[in-house]
Every structure is written in C-alpha cells, then in structure tokens.
Length: 51
Image (cartoon, rainbow, N blue to C red; front, top):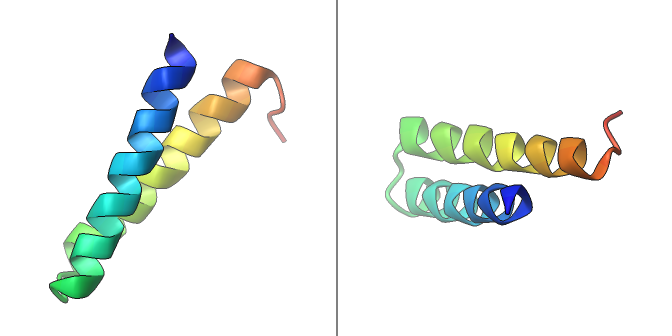
C-alpha cells in the first residue's frame, strides 16, 4: 500500500509543478518538484533500490 501513496505523491507533484508553470507561480512549481521527488524516493526505498 505504501507504493500507492508514493505514486499518488508523484502524480500530485507533477500536477502542482505544471500548475505552477502555467500560473507563473514559482513557489507552487518548486513545491511540486519537491513533492514529486519525495514520492520517487519513497518508491525507490520501498523497492530497495535506494542509490
């Protein structure tokens, strides 16, 4: 179930990033990038592929 949360976090991060770009809202874009990266890291940890 943890992988689902990680995947959802990545998707929501992408949405925030795109919204931030479209609205020219740099803090929203940065938050989306951070959230997307956090989801990707959580997924890698769950799979045991942490670099």
